[in-house]
Each structure stands twice: as C-alpha cells, then as structure tokens.
Image (cartoon, rainbow, N blue to C red; front, top):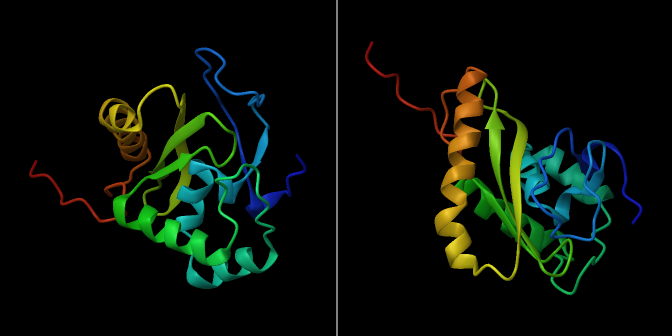
Length: 164
C-alpha cells in the first residue's frame, strides 16, 4: 500500500502488540492513511474547516476494503460523529477482520496532539468491545492529556476546575 506523507497519514510512534490480529506490520514509523484509521479520524476531526478542506482536496480516498469510506461527504459525516462523541471507531475499513477505537490526546490548549488506539478482531462482538475496551482507552487518553496539562473532555469541552 502506498501511503502519502504528512497530514495524509498517521504515523505510529509506539505500539504494544499482544498477539497478531492483523496482516499489517504496525511498527514504529509505519504510515497508514488517516481517512481509514480510527487514529486518523481523531486527528482529522480536530482540524479547522479550512484545514479539512485542504486535506479533502488532496486526499485520495482509495477503497482498502469493501467497507472503506470512499467520499469526502461520508468522511465529513464520520468526523462529525467523532467530534460529537469524542472518539472514533473503524470497522474493517483498513483491513477485513479488524476493528479499532481511538481517543484523542489533548495538549494544554485543548488541541488534539496525538491519539491512542486499540484494535481487535471481529471475533469479539462490537457491543462487548465497546463496553469493555472503550472506557479503558478513553481513561488512558484522558490521563495522558491531563499529564500534558489539558483540562478537556475527550470531545473537547473544557473541564471545570476542581476546588483545591
């Protein structure tokens, strides 16, 4: 798979592999198309409207599986969902048999600066994965964000100051 550089791809900087569930080799430095990954959608959802327009003007939304988003309108709709719920899910759009969740890591200014992600095989029912895995991922992303000085919920709302 040929993947463009920069804004058009997510780059893995660290990965913990428990056991192989995908045919992809996802080592540090691996680039994947942003539009087809949960991490990419978390990052794209935080772009300004002009930045997203520029991305969509240049991105080639190639079908990687039968489920991959193919139009800018579909991607915009999914990014609206990500903004609203504060996390992204991808169901077999990058590779058949592979689902993933991703949550934003925010800096002190509230901007998304990274994303945490987890993948699982389709042998695990989606409702079960959402109930068991997603809260752990959201908690880890929130704790990481807090360590970076962020006081924001995953969907970007400012957290109230706690009384000291």
